[in-house]
Image 1 (tube, rainbow, N blue to C red):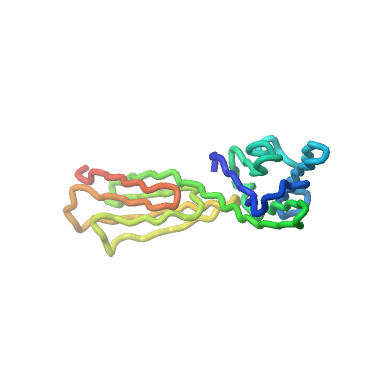
Image 2: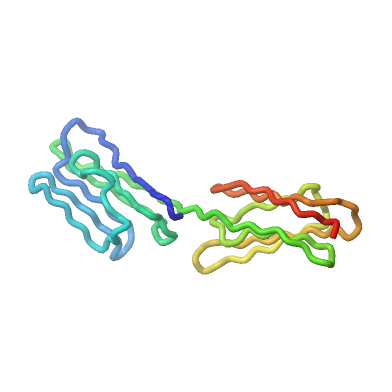
Amino acid sequence: IGHEAVLSCPNISKEPSLLVTWKRNCRSCCFLSYRRDHNKTSRLNCSERITWKYSPGSDPALRIYPVGLGDEGSYTCEFANTEGNFHFLFSLTVIVPPTVTLTHDKSRVAVCQASAGKPAADISWIPASNHSSEEEFHHPNGTVTRVSYFGWADSSFPSVTCLVTHAAMNQTLVTDLRC
């Protein structure tokens, strides 16, 4: 999310494309096209974030910047030349890194939270404990918040480490328990 996505339509032919189109596979979604014979590009229902990466006549790659959660889905590149019509399907998955926090309270419970990630982050503790539990909250936008609780009431650990693992990042947080 927030970065650039570039979908490249493979050039499997030595012949130049006469017509190239990109479309998102949903109703009333973005449609881009380029006709070489008229040197004309057209767009329908596309925001300014979705455009050609380069010149569509030389490299008809699709650029989405910045990527948002709503951009996730299937995209089709079609081109036609003297050798025939070609179709390529792409699937865009949007990954959202979570916001990570680690706190603890007077009841001797450490709380590690990975907020609004997509997919959900994995949380583990050092030292490992049988006294940890987890909750997960699913948000309407497709992100997930995962919260892990680490109780240390019967131990003498000077600190605990929360390890958060996610496709977009890895983060380690340490909190001092000697309060």
